[in-house]
Image (cartoon, rainbow, N blue to C red):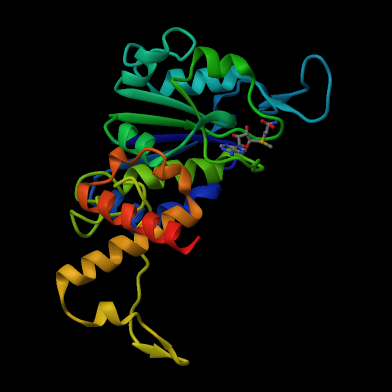
Length: 262
Ligand code: SAM
């Protein structure tokens, strides 16, 4: 898979690309990540990438021309369909051109899994008041938001999106099963984890984890995972179809116990 990140601050990505799983995946050629300076796609002497908004208001807007040019230079023209032309075709194409914006579709683990099947992903980082809307409508295949808050720029969002996708690529993680058991993959959050020492400042590790009894440990972990999901993300449990049969049974027990207490 290939990522092309378009930004006015290419240096932002130096640390991100040279550490941990992302670094390893690049070294092993499981993924290729190139960062492009938007100013390289300007033709004027001052490399201007922004201008004042039509209709008035504060701040500046990223201009369409350098972004159109960047995407045209980085992609093959027939490998994707822009969002404004056909939303479904845009989603299915082998190339995704993603505008990062708080106005976009929420980025989720399911979106990360869908995007991990792509051949190429172009990530366009906004700044200031955002990006001229003609980019989203005529060049992008997706508009993605990483959450209900406003960041100063799309660079952090581009790191979030690419990191979540890269760790789903085959053999990127140390163990093949790691991603399968993580939060959101099985319709709930992951279970809490502990390590040595078994007792720290009088704080004991739950005794169920010390039994060496695998079935008991599995049951305890599932229960804790479901309790945590119920407390912090009840929305995930609104549709329990994504839970396996054992999780569904444990959830019913937790709910029955809660009712008994009231
Ligand atoms: N005026 C815009 C709005 O309120 O919708 C916010 C612009 S924001 C200050 C500048 C840039 O940061 C955006 O163009 C986008 O690329 C990025 N950004 C901010 N919040 C984001 C989020 N939640 N998800 C993805 N990108 C975000």
